[in-house]
Length: 293
Image (cartoon, rainbow, N blue to C red; front, top):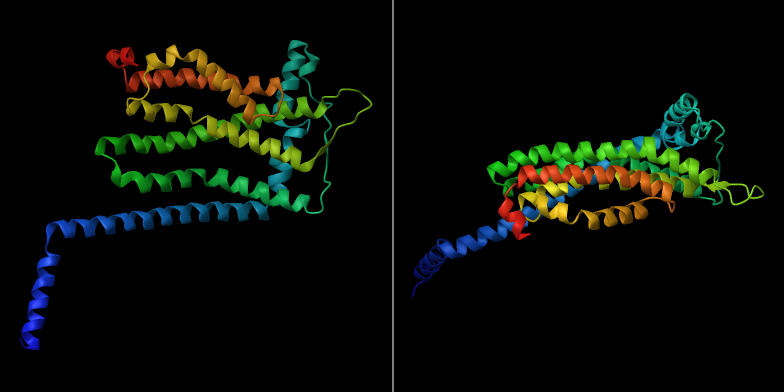
């Protein structure tokens, strides 16, 4: 056989193999898998880049971030403290007036203030970039959704962002100042003065703010579970007593170790659970499904 005939034969075999439907499908699947990985990598890179950009902006605006946000709840002229004082005077309850609040923060580590500066900047970057991060991951899963699921997912992106900021706002303006006042002024004896370490103060503020912001996503989680048929309103009503225990446990984890803060966090979480029951009822109102569960 001549070399030309051999080349023609080899080319024909390669052509037949390349047009084989099963092999073509396998090749396309492999390309699709690696394409999804590449898209996921791009989603993560864009999300991290957004967080870093906003973190750098926060780092460069140290005075605004610390004096007007992080350290503000410990001062008597903070908006929540002033409103509580006005309410206390109106109701003749002097205990609500926090105008004598004086919390002294100290730093006992050489790199303590710089590390806290970095930590707060990263946390601020995450909070500000949160809607963008949610949008990026929504874009990633969008091609896998059905048309009716896409309609719900668009609303979910807005709902996730709104609930997160509601949780952050609630914790910052309500839970944080009351927690600081309770823990910062609590004394076992007048002979023991409170000098709070900077890292202890900041870790308390950040953990409460971010923790409550994440927990406020409960209605969104219940919505998707109800869409999948895993949760029904009847199931949630029957297990309300167990959920109350779980809520108080979660509150104890994300708040400082005091009953006062735990109750403050538990109240909105219980309200969110009741709202979630209403959401599950709208999404999955089938009484038969409730009987099964």
